Amino acid sequence: MAPRRCPVKRFALALVLAPLALAPVARAGSVRPTEVKKAFKSRNPDKAREVLERLRGELDKRTVETVFKNALRLKPLGLYDDLVATLRTAEGDALEAVIKVARKDKRGDLRFLAVDALGKNPAPEAERTLAEAVKKDRDAPVRVLAVRLLGQRATTTAVDALIPLLAEFEGDPKQDRLVREINAALQNLTGQELSVAQDWKNYWDNNKDRWTKPEDHAPGTTKTRGTVLDRMKKQRPAELKTLTRMRQSELIVIKGNDRVESVLKALKLKHRVITREEFEKLELKPDEQTLLFNCPGKAQLSEQGIQKVRAFVAAGGYIFCSDWELGKTLAKAFPEVVTFLRESPRSDSPKDTRIRPFPEAAEHPLMRDVFPLNTWESSEGMAWKLEGRSHMVKEGPGITRLITCPDLKSLGSTCVAFTFAYTSEGGGRPVTGRRPPKRPPGRVLWVSSHFKLQKDPKSDGFALQQLLLNFILDKQEQRRKLRAVGGAK
Image 1 (cartoon, rainbow, N blue to C red):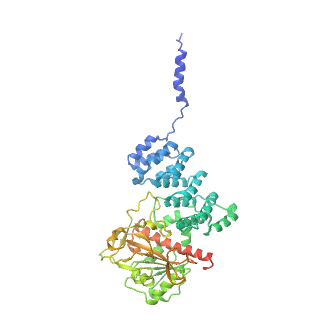
Image 2: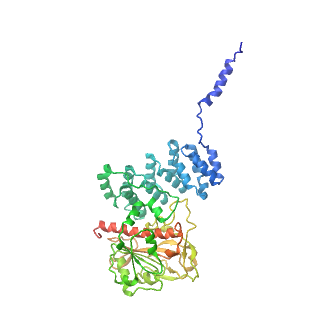
Image 3: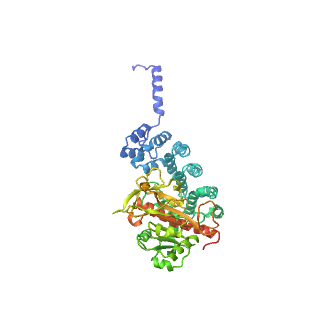
């Protein structure tokens, strides 16, 4: 006869085994927070990437918190896209943890990452957090990113969120860039080219029930810089369409010692190329045209040509020019605004010079995407090649400085790109913003560098090309404003 087991021992054994029976079986791909921390601290990109891949679809609140707590360790490793791809899969309490970072974290880099992760998350609360970031976040890159992600969601609720935001910001000159981003997002979602909140509201009230998802809705990325066209297709598709629809007569290139026409051809933008002699005789249309002057070299406009430049801008025209055009044209046509300072020292070959935005110009509409929006992508290595004897401007209150080159400090000016608006109301004068003109003014953009010198489409060439495209788009925005007051076709 088999011995009987003590009932007390059987009960004790049951108590020990019960929690094990009730505990959930760990999923094959699950990763503990300690493993995440160890992989991130290793600074080994392969180990960190492997852990991030295993985390996808397996996130919980604790692992999300651990990822964010240690994410900045990965900044030098180029794993930003991997972080976004993993955090994008958050659901339930894991999603709540991502939203908490987007709303409350003090570090802008982490809020940027959290907002980017929410962009493709289909949850309604993710979309609401994006709209909240546009309205409340204190960092401009986060707000701009949130707008662009809303513009890529292809939902009626995204349009519902963007129109009130536009109404809130469009009266504030300091929010000009954000207003343009919101308009671009709405254009991307609807295919319409409106620019005033009330017009958007009227359109949406009448068309919301018939709205269909936009075709070719390209997913965006904030990490892979690519070429200018790559970025425009992904981040600003509506504006790219605006550029491709322009007529040949709207972009006039004046020949010189650079090749801006080669850039326009590569970007597939229709344009017309003329000589300086032909410019002197050409009938201009300031309301429609942007003139692109290549560096003149030894050539020089006549006095009549100089006055033609002044009159064109005063009547609302846009002029892009570079290098020696500063002393040979701008300083003569706009002496109350532009002062030629000096030439840089002679040099046998172009030199790489570090560039960065002037702090006050970082959010200027012309600077959109000239430098990386993504705070995880450094612009410290960006440089332009500048030739010897480049013209330099005396920095004064009439110009808006855009890009600085600290390497030039000893020469008396670090400004290598500037702009100014100009109007003929009450006599020609620069527009400082204190008293807005009755109609949008003309504008000039000058850069020290040459397109032919910038060989890297992902850095130096990217910055210069994007600056040019922003300027051309700014003219199209001006035309919309003119049409609104009945001043342009």
